[in-house]
Length: 219
Image (tube, rainbow, N blue to C red; front, side, top):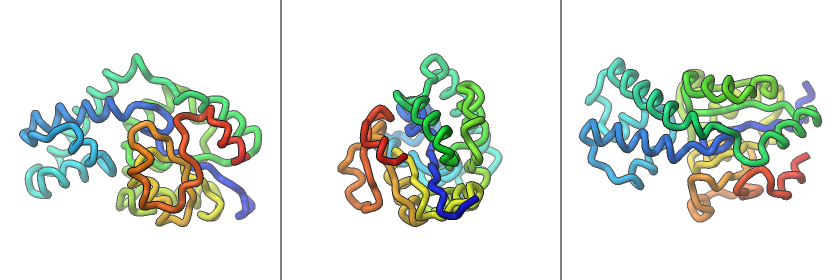
């Protein structure tokens, strides 16, 4: 593929589907069941990276065994999927946006800190795989966002240079990862306010959803 080819890289949760409040509820209940006693807004601030990394940030790296962390994370994801399933749909305007990108021959990938279990849940239920040339999940990288590894892997798999990739994100740490990868970002304001992104200068647009006319400038 031409290295000058433009490419789109999507985070998944909160960026393609508006599910972060369901993840927040799942983590809030799970963490406090485990004795963390944290308010929702503190839990929200920890919601980036791999599930196991979140548990380590809150409880330390010796509180649970790796096996216990896997089991806790999986239990939380099962509860999240059951709660969110009736509401599972793409963010407004995204179906048409994906179709236009496909017709425009813009290669697309998902670069997410979600595990394969959750990514498959979305891709299979919403029939998205035919739009994607690559999917990079939590298990495919050594270090999560804000490390740029996930987005750089996507760019490599898409055959695009980082400077020609546009990342769609909903979280400050994701925008930071895009900046670290040398990529511009579009922010979906599903979970965080504009003010929370003040530290980053790689943002080309803030949008509530994919119906915003500003996105047509990307084609």
